[in-house]
Length: 263
Image (cartoon, rainbow, N blue to C red; front, side, top):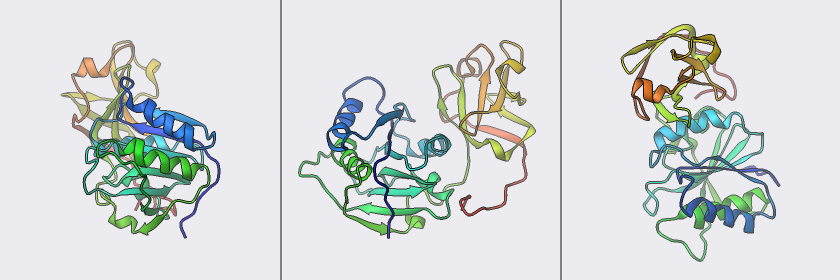
């Protein structure tokens, strides 16, 4: 039996950007159909059209969300195609969106994860905006405790289930020019050297631990290895963006697999 919660909090994770009508249209559906369930924007500039990199970023961000939260995730370049609409339950949270790898990392890091195909369809379903027409109504109904027709499917069959646990690339650049990578900070030793953009970077605990203008790496608040510059932009200083390759010399001993650990 696929488990559900009653009233919860909805978080939006999309590549819509802050401009344009898309984010507001999805929020309007959630407001109309979720009986007042609170909705917050987790991120609206996830790697555009790139569910693979967005998956590693989401796995980091999800850890800070409250237990029972529901994430409506829409990074969906295959919208209108053959990819399935799914609900994933992992880490005490639910994720609604496309089966294109976006939820593969949160599922892989919980050996008790469950997945379902969404069988419900609205009367009006556009070919290019399933975030508004399909995923938002489903998320709203689930958050409000309303039954939605679903069929359980094997987690091992989800797109991206065979992807590596970490990604040695930049997966996000924030407004300050800090570069999030797909490397898990707890898997990297304190004395590790991170190489990016032709630079060898040492770890610092935080920004003020290095001189102004110096580049370094640290474990960010989402648990990921992040490259930063004290008082500056790592994106500009190193000339790097999303997709840039990083290398790490010096890995910590892998943690033992736990009941909710990596697959």
